[in-house]
Amino acid sequence: MEILIPGLLLVGFMIWASTRIKRNAAKAYEREEIDTPEFSIVKPEGFLAPIDPADGTLFSAYSKDYGRDEAERIRQATADVRRFDNANLEVVCERAKADSTDLVEERFGVVNRSKCANIVVVRSDAGVPVETSLKMIAAPEAVYQLSITVLPEHKEDYLRNINELLSSFTLK
Image 1 (cartoon, rainbow, N blue to C red):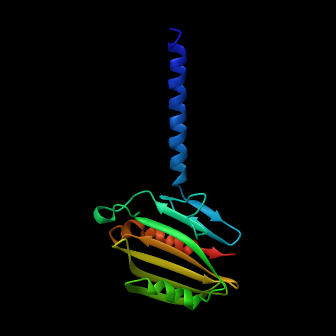
Image 2: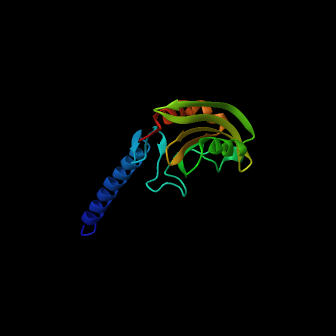
Image 3: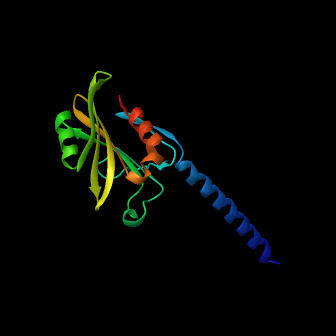
């Protein structure tokens, strides 16, 4: 009896903690507006954005699920934002196309008085073909690049998320 009461309290605490952890983990995959001093972007539902982005990026996010078969070590979708200081928009665009195996689409324009480019390329990631949508915006001192990479067999599943990321990415 002396052990039963503390044991029940311990089990009750463990159930409470487990439920709380699961609830917080689920919140991490909810839609979220990311607002930094340099840019803003909307992280769509189903993506996780670590507090500390991957090396060399200002923002990174990835899907929960991985690919299948030879792509089992590659996430179904990833997104990141990079800044290229003292760079030229055309040079950054050419660099992005140079790493690709196929150019699907390329558009240039002006948004909010800043030159921008939208490019879609196919490239290889560890021998697996992936499609990358890029949005590049020229700022006075740098070029910002949003890259969204998706496994082609999952593109339809992430099309809404890709469009939300691309349309929400703006500089301040």
